Length: 142
Image 1 (cartoon, rainbow, N blue to C red):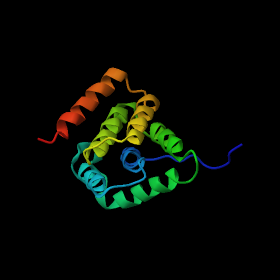
Image 2: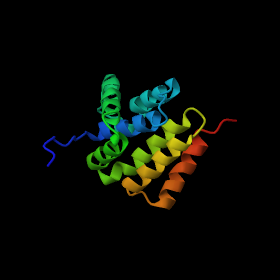
Image 3: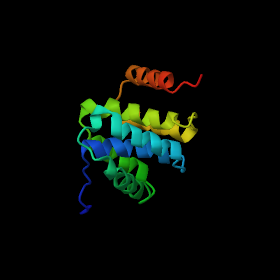
């Protein structure tokens, strides 16, 4: 039996963990992705009440969880799911897409993470397609 206490996150932290996973899944957290996360935390209404200065601590905490073992990504996704109310699961998916789109390319690892998130967060395939289309329109380049 596992005696380790289960990690619980605030909804803000869970959304940040989702963005960090999207950034780190390809093993390289890019500056543009970090800048995107910072802008999202500062300007989206879902982060009202969150101190943007706490962002680096949340990023580091997520990176520690992900690198803690061979199932780090799966554990992080489970913690995100358990910490988010169902009303914010689509938001989490949209934020992951925005971070992935920030550098102008979606790598295979990132696409696989999106698939995992869609399934684990119980996001309907058509809803996910709409969210993806919105991200593609927001991040279009000329």
